[in-house]
Image 1: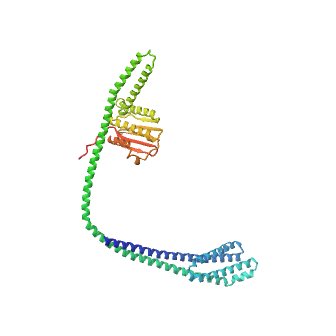
Image 2: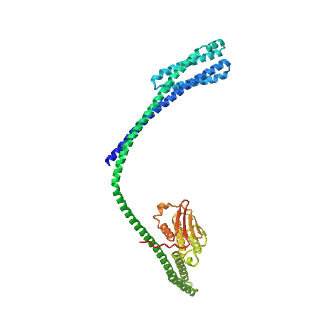
Image 3: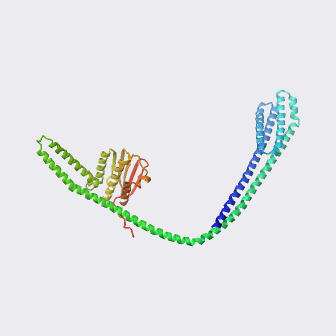
Length: 444
């Protein structure tokens, strides 16, 4: 391992060093090439401007047309700007400053000669400007400009060639360095392969042992999950049965007692019809109290096990539930309920889901409107409860919300699927089969 790390570290440092060195040399060479191209471009532009100025001057002298003075003036102005750019460019090259100064003096003499001819033309000295035009002075000055400019261009060409040579040397250095680093890397990789082969068999044995342990743990987790699910479903069924038993006991025993007491009080009240004391008012208060107890008993029985679910069916039961809940909570509840032939367990699942959803809305949602939909299809039904409340984060709330967990377990135990959407308000949607899907017992 130490040899591998040493080889790898050497390869990395060598690659970085060679790369940085080649990069610096290449950047310097490319900068020199760019400066050389820029200098050559400025020199060629200066020559073009001088030729344009001479053409404009000669056109004006020969044709007496002032339109030729426009390109002349533009070329003269551009010549001054180009000379300034050349001075800024060659200020870091002392060996070429003299050549640039010579070019500037030659250009100024040429410009002075052209300006003199134009002034003599404007002053009406025809013979004078014609004499200047026919002499060899203009040609000699242009030849001198071309000669000095050629020296600068040749120097730029040499600088460009030197830059390209530096780039080629940098590339060659990179090739040699990459080759050496690749060889070191190959050596390190070969050592790594040897070490990996030596540890391979031990690793395979460990993997087989770990895989066997994972398989055993997965089997235990699946078995215990199935057992816990079965236990939760069984406890839920027992809870519903206990609720039904308690509802029947309350209806049969407590209901009979309250009703008998109410009848006895009614008979006593009838016999005290002529009494003017406070006893009739107390009897009336006792009758009201018994009526409240009978109503409370009826509401508790309906919460424990709605009798209308067995007697009237799911849709009337949900209408009664939503109507009473809307009166108690002040919510505006809209119910769109389609009749469907459902298993008794599915009906109870839907009822409990809507009951739990309404309870949560009243406690936490701060909503004003609730919409409940029950839609029947060929092989399943969908139930949705939507409110316009503040919503919540399902990821942060659902793990600690036993009501949501119980609702999800109840729906999934019946073979359905529960979805919660909190994009706008809260929408809880359950998709359930028409009958309960019986699951096979888990294998040990």
